[in-house]
Image (cartoon, rainbow, N blue to C red; front, side):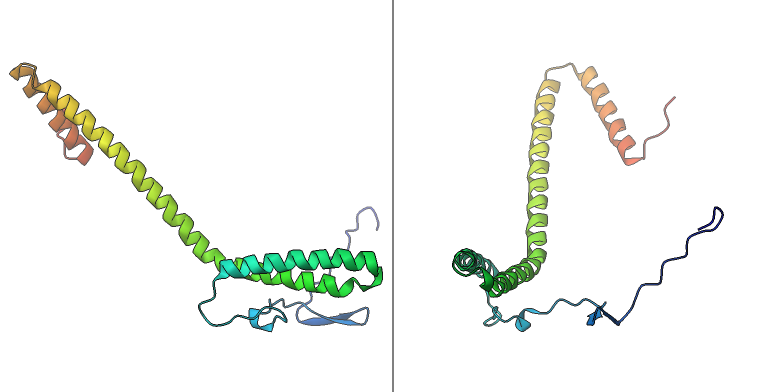
Length: 167
């Protein structure tokens, strides 16, 4: 490029399919559903996803051990085991994505219940403080009690926004 020349713009992104090095590639990525998997089969709507994940994890460990044995015995036959492990990991990934909405719901439920518990504790502490202050008011003279009551009334009105302007 010359001193004042700008480099050319990059080509626009490819949409659809294209051929590179003799292989056909598609730019639209769609994850295959569970049912297209060779190993994972869902038996009815009442499948326990947690149990499925546990069984897939055990199967993954077994396949990994088999892969290590195959690599030791016949190093050239590892491709099939790697494909099996990849398929198991993909199935686990799909199951984890299926669990995410219920995980978010459970997390939200926990956070809200914790906030409710904290608010109840604070409310109980405020009521105890009010009762303590109210007990102390019974022992002071009537004139002071009236002044405190009036100040409390003004404070409540101020928080509601209905208090008269005081100079």
